[in-house]
Length: 420
Image: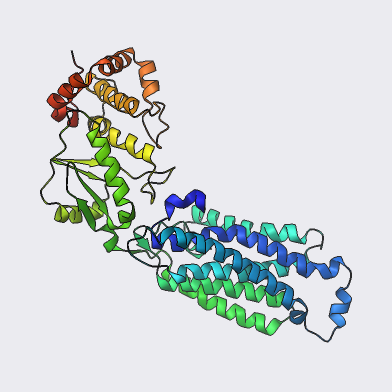
C-alpha cells in the first residue's frame, strides 16, 4: 500500500477503495491457513474420530477457524489504520466509506470457505498450497473475463475493482451486494465442508440476492461533481486545482511559483496553470478565475505512472512545468498540422526544454515522468539542436532573460527562433 500511496493518500474516497487491493493476497494466505487446519485431521489420521464424534464439525474446527478469521481481520485493521493515519492529516473533505471496507471483511469469510472446502477434498499434503492458489486463480479469471468477455459484471463483482475513485463513485447497492455475495459464497462453502447442508442452502440463497444487486447496478458510475470544483490561487501565474486534489494544492502552488521565478524574463501575469485538461471542470475554472487567461498551461500532478496523482513527485512536476512552457505549444501545433520533421521552431522548443532541465539538474534521457521527450536522443540525432542547446546555455543570465522577454509570445505559439 505504501508503494502505491500516490493513488489514494489524502483522498478519502480513494483511500476507502484502496484497502480492497490487499484482499487478493490476503485471501491466499487465509485460504491456505484454513485448508491446513481442516486437512490436519486427514494428515494426522484422526478423521474417523471426528466422523464418529458426537460433536459437529463446526464445533471441532470452530476455535481454530475463528482464530484465523480474527488474525486476518487484525491484519486488515492494521493496514486500514496506516491508511487512515496517512490520509486524515492531509484530507480537506470527505470521510471513510464503510461500504467499501465491507468487501474486505467479506473476503475473510470467502477465504475461510475456500480453504475449508479445499482442505476437505484435496490431498492433505498439497491442500494448503492448492488453497493459496485458488483465490488468485479466481481473481485472474474475473480479470480475463472483464478483458475478453465484454461484460462489466466481471470487473464490478471482483473483490478488487480498478475503478478510480477520484471523480467517480460506485453505487451503494453494488458495494453492499458485492460484499453480501462473497460473504455468502464463503459461508456456503464452509458449511459444505462442515457437512451442514441446510445452512449452506440458505447461504446460497443469500448469495443470489447479493448477486442480483450487483447485476442491477453493474456498470453504473456516479460522478461526484463537487470534486471538479475549481480552487484558484491568484498571483503570477494564477494556479488552479480541483477539489479532489486540494490536499496537494499548497505544494503544487509552491513548486509552480518556484519554477516560474526560475525562468528569467518570463512574465506569467496573464497565465493560468491547471493540473489536468478534463472538460468537465472547464466551466468551474472559468467561474473561479477573476479574469480570463491569455494562456493556460497544463502541468499534471504525476508520480510514478499515476496521473493525476494524489501525491507530488517534485522532479516530475518541475519537468512537466518546463514541458508545458516550452514543448507543449510545438507538440500541439505539430499534431494539428501533421508535421513530423524538425523545424527551427521545434528545435528551439527542444533547446529551451533541454536548457530548463539542465538548470534544474535533471536528466535529459526522458526519465523524469512517463511519456517525456528524450532530449538526449534528439540532440544526438540532430547536431543543429545540440549546437543550439550549447549556444543558449552558454549565454549569460542577462542575455537569456532578454531573449525570453522578447520572445515570450513566440515561445507560447511555437514561433521562436534561436538567438543569433
